[in-house]
Length: 111
Figure 1 (cartoon, rainbow, N blue to C red):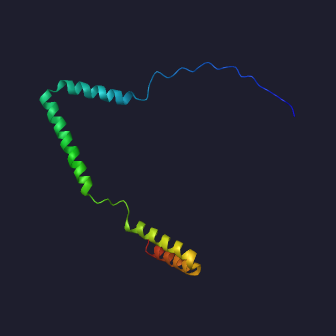
Figure 2: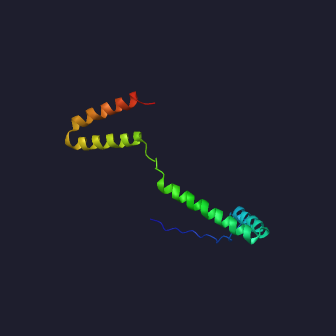
Figure 3: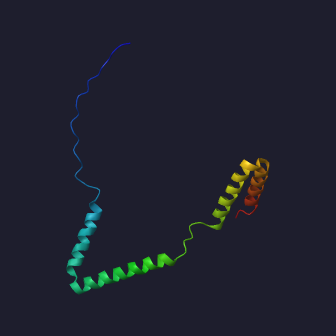
C-alpha cells in the first residue's frame, strides 16, 4: 500500500456578476412608483379600494366554487385499484379476473 498526496494551489476567488437576476422586478417596481407618484392621492385611494374589492370578490368566489380537480374517470381508476388490491390479498384468482375485466372495460370505453 503506498501513500500519496497531492497539493492544490488555492484558486483566486471568482468575481460575482454585476448584473443581478432581480433586475426586471426592480425595473417594474420603479416604473410603478413613477406612475403612482403622478397620480393624486384620491386616485391612489380609489385604485387601492378597487384592488381590495376585486381581491375580496375573487376570494369569495373561490370559497363557493366547486373544485373539479378529480374527474369521475380518475375516481374510477382509484376505486378499481383499491378493489383489485384488496382482492389480491383475500382472493387472488378473483383479483386477476376483476383486473382483466377492468382493463377490458377501460379499453372499450376509452375515448
